[in-house]
Image (cartoon, rainbow over all chains, first blue to last red; front, side, top):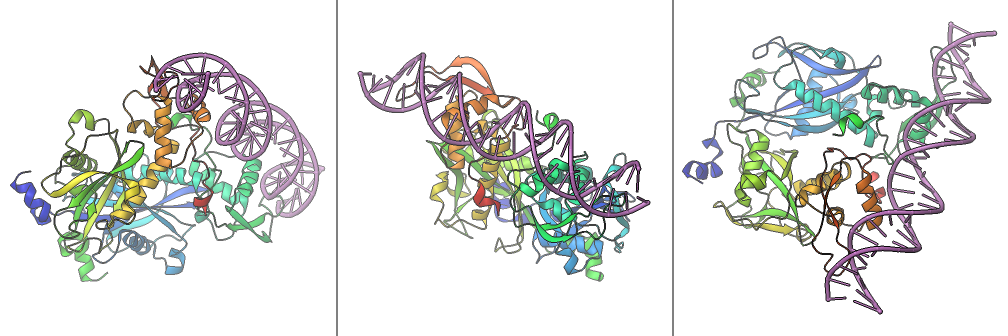
Length: 250
Length: 250
DNA sequence: GGAATAGTGTCTGTGAGACAGTATAGT
DNA sequence: ACTATACTGTCTCACAGACACTATTCC
């Protein structure tokens, strides 16, 4: 350890400043498609490119609070609707050159939200909106946000296997079919309706019946479906594993 | 958005400085017990308390590189032995008051290492060593490191279920019994030897035989065991689930 | 010989998935 | 009437866990 390193151990100002931001990969399901909240940047760098909502963490807030605040600012949601949104830490991204202006370490978060109204663009963004994740390929994303989004989507797919968080994409009361729709949308493949139904009801604590049913059957016929609420389980056991995972193993 | 917030969006120096550190929860197995690399702090705050190895991120290194560097510095290992250590990001800890000196956001990492020699204390630490994790309860840990360690241990237990990373606690060639020992140590419960044996060999890509066997049988008798290497799987399918997870589900 | 360990055989229960079938509603 | 959907029944296969057993080696 030389003199510079010794000093640096005690005096962080011996190093150039590092900025800490929080970014949010916010997912929701609209019209059967997985959507992502994105902001079109109004100034350089990456002016005109799409970016994740986020910003500098404030002195008195912790990381999760900062992420929740950024999400609330961009979506314009009140406390009541914010409370139904699941938010967890996704990971930190700190490559030295990920932001051309300075060293920025971003703590990315992942959010699952029920279908929400279109966001009102904040003053520091030219535009904000929910974009289908299928529309991202080919589009130029700011910073390393393409990778953050990829990580977030994979985390979301994985979380649906072991946790009951799929319910967070739905209204407080939902049918098994709607829940199956969440899985099919996030995983990107159809599931067997009958087996899914039995499986969901057999996992302890996943859902609990409300005793009520939908007012009408399906748009194209069928009986009225029973309504369920999220149960008290925090983990699904046994888990609902994705079919055909062979590709990702090696 | 008021004037201060507007400026802060463009000029991070409008906020008080934030320091970014990397910390490492480094785990290894010694004499059948799970051990953790800890440093006894030589100066305030938390002087004399045990803390995770870590330090400030340097301007030109990314987060994983910083964590690997800190680990190498504390253990005194060369590149060859460092390469066999698994390192992954664990999570970020950024509560505003976690460090009394200033705002410090720490990106914690998790490392799995084979049995290593005792570390040589670096100049900025009074003492360094591998401590059994069972010896931690009751001991005063610096900062929020007790929580970081808890999160790391739970992550380690979980990773052994879905990945072949248990092999990272062992030498390049190992027996099924030694591998079972890793699981039993990390999970803290005995496993059925026969079923474990069959299970490990049946998971594609978990281990591959070397064609050789140990020189001697067990210390207290038994045949010579076949030797295996880590296979090419990155995920175990089907997974090796911990027995009796009911407690953690709700 | 006695004891411990490596490794295999077998049985049972659970659960996933395929498939079929019934009941209920919309058009 | 026709069709789509909700939900249930049944069969098969895979696998986890319990138990038993043999073979090998150390003491």
